[in-house]
View 1 (cartoon, one colour):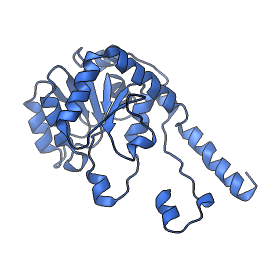
View 2 (cartoon, helix red, strand yellow; view 1 turned 90 degrees about the vertical axis):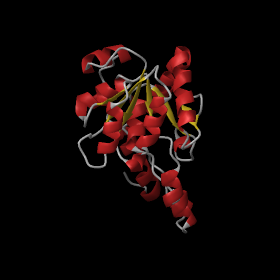
View 3 (tube, helix red, strand yellow; view 1 turned 120 degrees about the horizontal axis):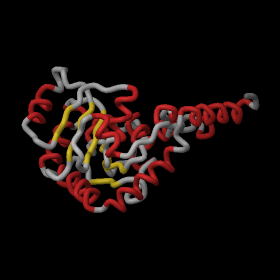
View 4 (cartoon, helix red, strand yellow; view 1 turned 90 degrees about the horizontal axis):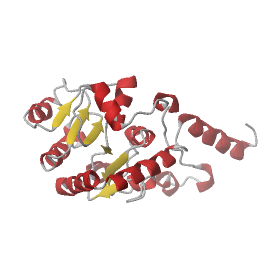
Length: 227
């Protein structure tokens, strides 16, 4: 929004309207243990990432952090049979605490999110440095919908919806040790994990696709006087 205003559009004609998630997809609630059992995952503290496995998604950062957190199981839910994914999948096979599920969608993807005690957005500043501005990834909205603790980078885009120690832990970007420290902390502090998950659930309530549609309609009504 600010980029458009800076380019000269009147501020009252531009409104930020966040993406969202389908609440029906998350109607069935599962504990992490129940979701892990459904997916055949081991019963241990679990970190989940969903999305592309690729250099642009800082997969190496996730694997570096996984190597530093042997007490946690890491699950990478993304296509593992692509050329860009191959080197990361091969590295993951040699790591006893990393599982690559392959591409998931629909109920299986929801189960993967619910299997996590914590969900991670790769904390990298590279896209912001390269493009100057970024958009919040769709995965952030589904992470919030999953009602789990979230770990993300302490970056301007993430801070629009996430607050450190409020509904997430925000860590120094591009630092595997910082990401690992957040995982260590959430494994050791289940009460904090539960508090962050509850706050994420509260944040998600205003971020459904129907709520987004309502905000768009309200903006049109304010601008035109008709709905």
